[in-house]
Length: 465
Image 1 (cartoon, rainbow, N blue to C red):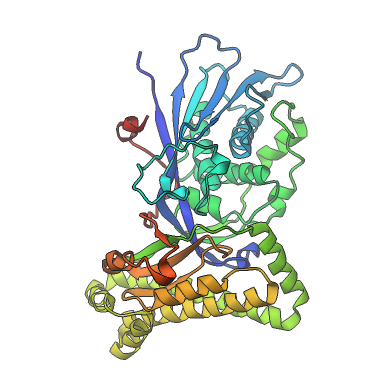
Image 2 (image 1 turned 45 degrees about the horizontal axis):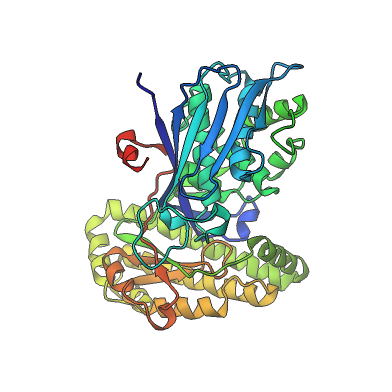
């Protein structure tokens, strides 16, 4: 008997511009999808017991990576409830993804409970976790529990949640999560599941990127999710009918979230460096918001100026992408000329050579400089280490390397990583720098991959199972 297997994957992210300001829905953020992906492979079980279908999620790369849940029809309502088979081993993101999808499909009546049990195997690209210096396979097998392996800050929880939700929708409701008309449901479910797992309503840019790919993101109103009644506190508790019906309404309403496509223009590349540090993002956000509240007009002025710099970089990337298509000769000639120029040289070349393409490259350099300047003011004023001194030294050292337009500490900042926009032809030379300010940097072998969630070719995935 042939078993129909499917695989859905979702990408990690690099948050290039819009940190902190993204909390306000009117402010745009530039988020790029990366080639690092998390894969969810569905395998129907041939078990004869079809009265209690079981969902088992396996993460074979990590010690203790197995979580199982059984579905059962409620004796008091027509809804289906979820109970944990392995309660001693808990992964909040796995549990929340499974519970949220099952609750939603139960509320809509779309849940097919007569089907066989389901096994979902998770594969996580090695770029999501800090690696030893020796080369490792794409899906490295760690000898530790998942929570004990250091992360590189690429949004693994959002990619995991999104790929799991996609796999569950496909199997239990025959919904194609990759289809454009289904992505709204996928996005909203993944956002609710991710927020429930985190215990708070986040900005949502990482989940949106996992669903839609590289985007200019405008946040949804947080009250959309916070208006939900409390979700069941554990998978053993039968969800209240009021929660199920409210969940259905929340998932199906228009969130008015902004997800316009926007990618790094061709022949440029996003280059990520893992600094193997660590940052407490929630604590940093609290410090920044307190600084904005207590800092009066001076803090608000920085906030506004930073917002304009973010908008400038986003608009420049969009127009550069258009130039690359509409005036390819002019664009290619300029890119050829910047491979041997550093950040300052690229700006000068753009202004002196003239032409719209050159102006845009100079504008991109200026926008990144303005973003970093204002983030350093926020760092000093708030006490949150958004661009710490060590990262300032590293980014300054990067800016004198040939082919580098500029770089930032991505997302909320901190000690985790740096993110550079560079000429693609210069990447090999840039990554050879491992001394001095670069001694703690591990250049990640990934690139922007603008596609969001997608279905994978099982023939390519089988060899990893």
